[in-house]
Image 1 (cartoon, rainbow over the protein chains, first blue to last red):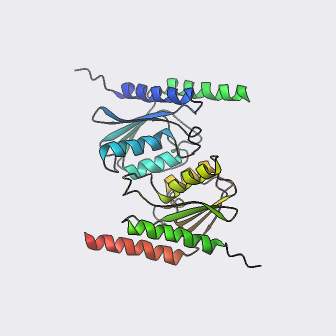
Image 2: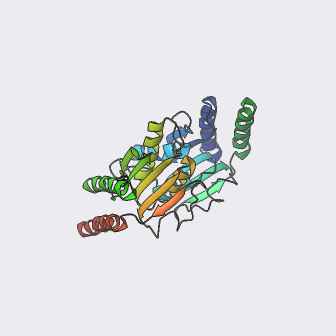
Image 3: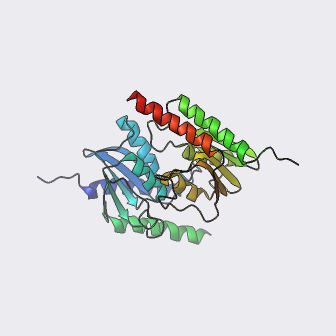
Length: 149
Length: 149
């Protein structure tokens, strides 16, 4: 049987969140966390609006998912995020013991792999799902910003 | 003239926060952030109480200080924290562009230096202030936990 709840389905939901960030003038990054094919957290970057460098999509999603679960650890959970997590977010994912991370676009400069941040040994990683859509959104944002200055 | 507002003075304030964490059954880590010798944020680890791995003392202090300042960047600010920051907290400090970090006890396993997390190039680092007091508090906590199990 065809499973409609595949990685593309959930990454689309993360992209919808990224679009909400863009509408607010934020760097367009969105995330969702799933548990048994159910979305238990949705978030998008709010660093400008909240005046807070810690308000990345992933950080909010971790807090929100833990709140839903009623426990600190995100075992049996998957995070879908439109951009590769940074040191801070990967560091938070380390503590969360997330089961699986899926990110769309790679960040070769500030991404956790370039920065050598360690995820939890239990966390499986996949990337590239809808990466063109995610990158296009980020590029559009930065071109717009540059033209405004 | 003698300056009463030295590193020891502010680290004592961070230790007071660590004691508050201990009273709540949390891993006893406390932090304060100063701006021109004024404390603008105080916090202690609340990961158990808030059921949130992101609720480290440093993360809360960064959010709180930015709120006080009305800006995301912690330039001209010093963070005093009783334990060496982890990957997540150092990653958050990277984004905050903190001017100076002072930590008491070293964390040779999960500290940001062992984990190779990058702070912002502008951040100066000192450590060791009141490290014995900070370590003693952490050891007491873990011995107590072990005896309860």
